[in-house]
Image (tube, rainbow, N blue to C red):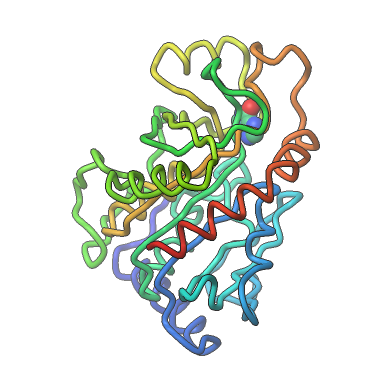
Length: 278
Ligand code: HPA
């Protein structure tokens, strides 16, 4: 597979960011990536500016049901936020560089904190449909990394440390906030699979044996890329179903979206609080 040169890649990121800047009244400080069924958080942004992905130079276009495919930018809990309503997944056929392009653009726009969210399958037997899980760490043994290819030296080092992808201090604050709010936020390791099929029961057993608490098809590339650039990341998985083999009924996307909707109010409250305290 062909990778962009460092120079071309850096130029594309800058051009996309420059275009977005012409639409914005301010420089955003917090990035939000909203997963399946969780995009509604963006509805709480005050007088948002919407920037459809297809209008932005070099942006891929989202194809998944339940993903709007735009940035929503504005004040949220008194903070300047840029939210992705819809994200890019590797299983859609994009390259890893394309999947994480928006995160790099966020950095170029001035984002220093990132809140990533997703729908995921529960592997940890303490979880059930509707559980919210703070991501403590991630596992990606799919053989693909968004940092492959020429390194973007302007953004981060060739061999970045990955021991604090989900910022420990940031996570501690989120846990404390959840506790104060009476939200039973669990913690766990997000095990990345490329999808698009849900995992087999054997894969789910493997994920559990290797230390995974939840399985999902997003987030890991974006979180690593953000950490590479020095962005402080926190992540929340909405466990929309127990993973294959644990849950006895067949998995489907409608169920995922439905469960996400069911816990949406709690989820919104938590995200609001996180944004407020950043
Ligand atoms: N596996 C992978 N991704 C998911 C799942 C799952 O069980 N549920 C929601 N997203």
